[in-house]
Image 1 (spheres, rainbow, N blue to C red):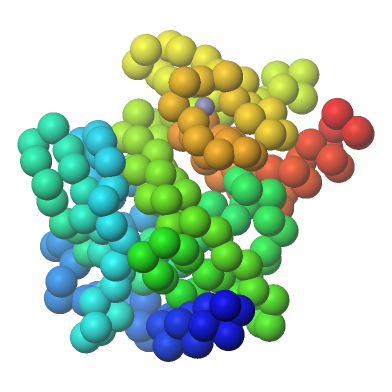
Image 2: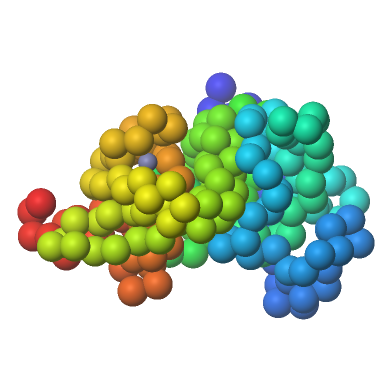
Length: 208
Ligand SMILES: [Zn+2]
């Protein structure tokens, strides 16, 4: 079983893109500005991501997903995808500093930091990408108030508190949970120099 798994992963392992590859935009990518985490990848709510894939020619990642307008496909820049993998590891409290390669299978995603391998269900990455997109669509903002992390939606004025394991919203999956608020909190804290979310709770708030 382990052998079979290893073989499957080694067949589809993609190395970290070079600077040049990141600069050279795939012709498949939509021609409307560079994709970045703070901008929506898709300009409306993604109801569900059906599949994450990678093209055989050019190794361009893509998602097949459903919105209220129907079923669509969007190609993703290597840099956006790479950054998303790091973000997901960060909110899952995996202290991965640098991803050196990744592999995509129908049911799981594998990331490598040098020789350390870490796998998680592909369903988590699908849920993550949809929520990361939603975070950007809603332009969520983060404030630290008395060491509490409060994430606000500037339009609806809704505020949610993010904790080391969770969030009190209804749109979350997994444990530690994946939701748009925890993604916003992670990105905000990373901008301040923190690593994974757990680092902030462990080091920044004593044992809290
Ligand atoms: Zn939440």
